[in-house]
Length: 93
Image (cartoon, rainbow, N blue to C red; front, top):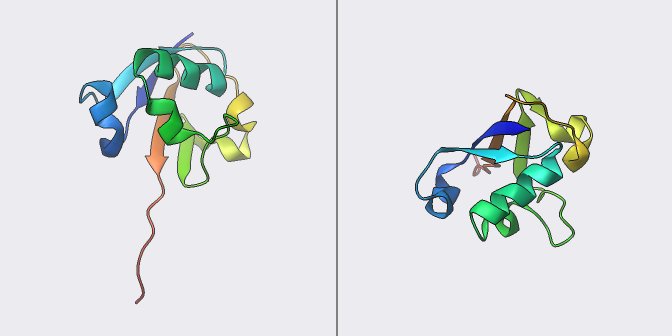
């Protein structure tokens, strides 16, 4: 299934400066593997060695955080949109 993946600015150098790319797969793991096959090195920036998303990377399927769904096993449908968003930490007030 083809989905649109929104890529954050820090990772765009790996996607030929594209902010949106298409990927195929039936769940988040397959989508991330497909991204890696298209854009070598992107998965290691998003995932730990075991394939789980890094804790400072938020992945949304449409508008839902996959951590509150089935994590990287979350199923996707044709036409869904995935957003990869690095967490931002602030300073002291």
